[in-house]
Structure formats: C-alpha cells, structure tokens
Amino acid sequence: MLLAALDEGGREIVEIVERDDGLIMAGRYLSAGHYLAPYRKWPSHQRRALRLARGRVLDVGAGAGRVALHLQQKGHEVVAIDCSPGAVEVCRRRGVRDARVLRVEDADTTLGRFDTVVMYGNNLGLLASRAKGRRLLRRLHGITTERGRILGEILDPYPDAAPIHLAYHRRNRERGRMSGQVRIRIRYRDLATPWFDYLSSRGPSSRSSSRARAGALPARSRRRDRCTWPSSRRWRAGTPSDRVRRPS
Image (cartoon, rainbow, N blue to C red):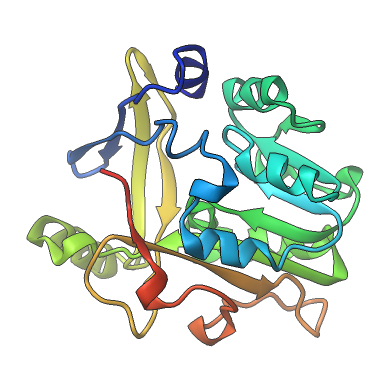
C-alpha cells in the first residue's frame, strides 16, 4: 500500500481492516496527509512528544519513514524497522539511511543499543496482549541504554461507544482477554496479512471516542528483571484535549 501511495503521487489508498468477529472497516490511511506528511503537518501531540527523543533512536513500524527522516534531519542516528518489505523500500527511497525488514519481536543487541524507541502510528498496539506485552517490553529493555525511553501512540478501544464494539470487548473480557485486545488482519486489493493481535488502551480520563494519544515512557525499570505495564500517569506528553480523531 505504501509503495502504491508513493508511486501514485501520495493519492489516497484505501486499506481494509477485518476483525475476527466479521466486522469490516475501511480507512483512507495512506494519503499524503498521513504516512507521507512532513513534520509541520503532523498532529500536535505527535510533534510535542517527539521533542523528547534523544540520542540513538529505534523507529518501530517505520512505515514510510516520516519519523526517521525528521530525526535524521535533527542529527539523530536512527534505525528504522518494519515487517513489511514494501514499507522498508519506501523508507529507503525517501532517504532513510538505515531501514531494515525486521519485526520488533526479533530486535536484539545486534542492532546496538538505543536511547529512544519510537512507536508512532498507534504501534504501542503491537504489545498485543498481557503475555506478549511483557515479552516485548523485556526485549526493548534489553536493547536500550540506562536512560532509554519509549515514545508511543495508542488508540482508545471504544470508538464512539458503538454497540458492536462494546459487545466485542465484552466478549473479550468473558474469554479472559484484555478489553482492548483485538484480532485483525489488513487487506489491500488481493493481498492480506496474517491474523494478528493488536492492543488499544483507555486512560482513566478518556472519553468515548476513537482517538490517539502520544507520550513518553521509561523503557527500563529500576529492577532489571522486572518489566511492568505503565500507568497513564507516566505519560509525559499528550492530554485528552490534544488527541485527534483516527482518520476515516
């Protein structure tokens, strides 16, 4: 999809999200105003949170490379990773110096160590579940420096409190899954990803809307053997008034 958006001048490309309960959602996610947008056109909460980036940076789920490109221009050494070969090709064509086809689950110390991990595009959702989230946070702990931090973004799990979404999350809780945990796949033309779990989260002050928020979290705990889910109090940037609606 990103290759199509780049090759066709940034025109809107419709992606299809299919949920495991049969719900189909379509989104114009890949317009020039989204993945290909220059920094000045990013939502304010993303710009503000990115000011907290420091040192060597790992850009997780880099997409078209907008975060990596901006931080490169600011003088940071950036490694951009994405599981999509097409996304990595777009990153390289747009000027990202170090872009690699790699899942965040496979990131290790062969990449070196990082002072900042960026998980924009709601990529904190890659934590996926309680078990996988703990494993992934331990992995990030292992590749960050003592001053490491995560700049991430996540969606509210209750978009507009529609009954179909409330019922889905209720069934999740009844099955012992996290309320914001969804199982989806992405489709484009005759292509489809494998099914995967994705996590969204609501803070205590959230309102019922499909909104994203961004902020900073410490990537390392005081105890090396302990990785815990952060509370909403740990977010350093992004408030309810700053959240923006998910593109539709």
